[in-house]
Image (tube, rainbow, N blue to C red; front, side, top):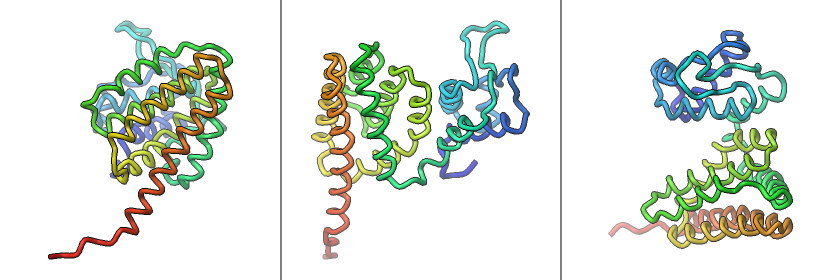
Length: 244
């Protein structure tokens, strides 16, 4: 597997090839998590993440249990747009960050407005925010929960295309968000601000205030992007320390 691919993306690529070349077809069952993990040399959590993306794309259905109906069954092959979305999952890290941010603004402000109209179940998003309050979280752990929070809002909207697109962009979003965090001078203060902004987004949605929800998530995305862009430029311009 390529060193620059995250493990679950490699699993997804492997399964995509099998679907496209006919090695796997509708009605077939995916190999179990343990078998796929061993075959591809990855952890079972990576297999689960790839399977979750396939399920979001509507290509498989999963059932819990241990009987003959358990596991993941292929229900469709990735033709047309579905194949494009799967390829987006693997290629998005090569897109300009500004394009990723602009796309997030289009998708996520729409999601926020829609959620404010429909009074959705926000328990998953709330649970993620509660988890983000844990002071012992590492930067990477906090940001992973952050990305899952944004994806949970897309999932709550019920729009499968938006959810699949957000899932396809996830690795690209994580890449710029994480790289930018390394340039932040006061991560503790930034982390506290992000938590407050998340709560504000949910509060606006719960209040059924479409404008406030859209504004809250737009400001949340753009403020962080502007911050990391500015701090990275400042770090690049700072004079190097002179050797003693």
